[in-house]
Image (cartoon, rainbow, N blue to C red; front, top):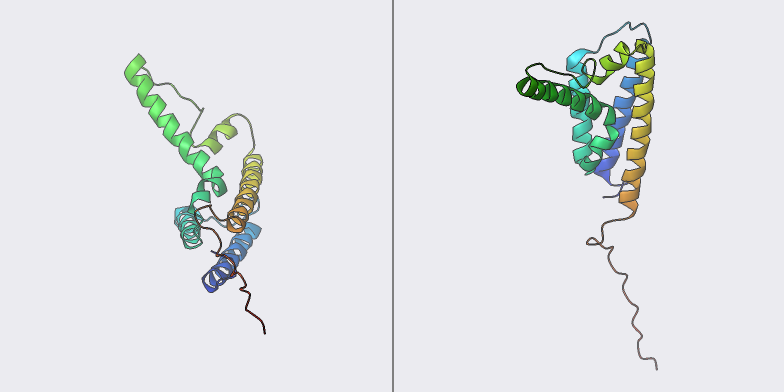
Length: 160
């Protein structure tokens, strides 16, 4: 699927609109926060990200682009699973992290809240750039089973 197709052009306009809304939110959410997004806004943004990935047929890149979200979710899963397993095995639950999700672990290690936020934003930005570069690479190089249509071979006509 090429990025110049009408479906993706409309999708790009939508994405830039959402990015503008997120930048406006971040402008007013600089430390200390004046506006809180909450679960409703964050779940809506996650749904938008998933729909855009599905519409652009780049859904395999979601874990790359959302590496911060994946790390946060995996930290909770690891913490609860390990705690339950060690409680069954040893009679007392043990923890992998000081606290889950992952950002609370870093806060308990002594990082300030702005430090954690800045580092996660930096990691998320790098992951987004890697995701964009992979998406452009996949768009430029289609899989081998989807070869580009062959150019017609000119035929020679018998002249006079």
